[in-house]
Image 1 (spheres, one colour):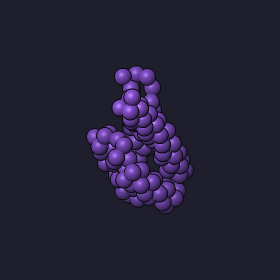
Image 2: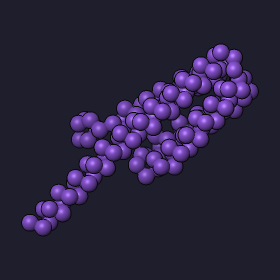
Image 3: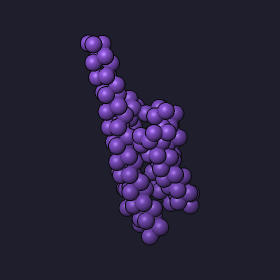
Length: 125
């Protein structure tokens, strides 16, 4: 009977960790997507300095998220997002025309990460 209780406790702990990771990832990705929208709006309005500063904040938020999510998420899901996020700061400082395309791609990748980590019955089994 003790083994059954220990096994049930471990399963409940893993289920709780899965739910926590999904909710935490969802909130952090939503925050990063709002930063992406801010960078895009500032860049479209012609405020290059403001867009560059907001892109720097977005990159620091991403680094914070990446450091904590290494334990919970697969690294291959984070690598491409990391590459694009680091490019956006440089592109906004240079005033490149590729900024909007990179922001769109980053938003799409974050949306995919967010949807893949939210616990649904088809994600669990």
